[in-house]
Amino acid sequence: MPNTVAEKPHVLISHQMLSPLQAVLEASYQVHRLWDYPDRLAFLQGPGQQVRAIVHAGEMALGKDLLSEMPLLGLIACVSVGYDGVDVPWCKDRGIAVTHSTGLNAGDVADHAVGLLLAAWRGIVEGDGKLRAGGWTQADRMSPRHGLKGRTVGIVGLGHIGEAVARRVAAFEMKVAWWAPRPKATELPRAESLMALARDSDILVICARPDPTNHHLIDQAVIEALGPQGLLVNVARGALIDEDAMIAALKDGRLGMAALDVFEQEPTPAARWADVPRTVLTPHTAGATLDSIPAMVGLTLENLRRYFLGEPLASPVGS
Image 1: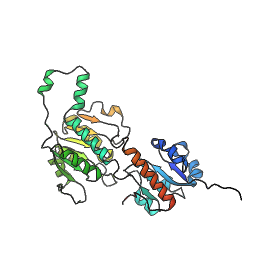
Image 2: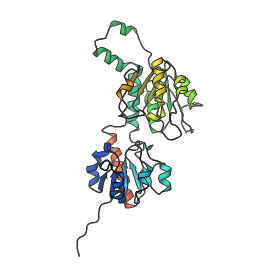
Image 3: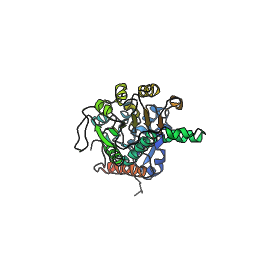
Image 4: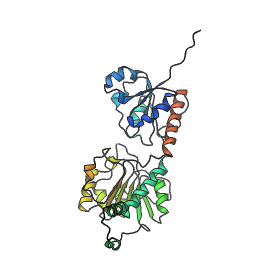
């Protein structure tokens, strides 16, 4: 009898940022890269007919017009913790499972959030720039800022990341409160509303998971409630903040400071921030460390393995 070798399952990598995964995926799968097909119709009429799983960056939009034309698709495996680019209910109705790397980079994101908080509140980045530009004068030491002890940090969204932020800022002897639409069993005090949390906080840290109901959750009213002495920190998603309103408030002093790792448009245009004062900005790197990335990739590979063997998935969305 002829020696036949079973064909490897077909897997699609959705975005070029995930291209480093190609080599490890090719050991077990026939790998396709969506960016190799500028003609989407050609892809759907060709390899798209065989793709059974997609390896995806969850914050990136994955169009239903694409997914609906892939007849064998049964799994979208998000390497990221977030999956806001995927319409999960739509997928569920069509028998397409969605997985993500839940909780695996929460500590790293929380560390970054606290780093942004410190850098902005204590003027660390501003001071570094002034020193390097030759602008250091003795007058700078006579213009002190408030310390952190006793300040109130309001956390929007008390999931894995929000809880990790709360533990860290408590070590600085700061007070912690939180708000989210749904109650949660915790000893930390929950504000009666988002507006109340913003009003009563010195620092507002956004850790909420984005969904269609909370676009621009942090709007002009919330920003103004935080106020001219307040600091807004965002390590969640850019769409949670009305960025135009925030920039306007920073420019005219209705908001004290902002420290951001995420933006409404990514990469965000440098010119947009050129004249925005009292900001600390990083390029969506909070959750990407040499410790968390291998763990997230490993969980993605495990979800793929289980799916193709018909086993229960390791981290389905909603579990």
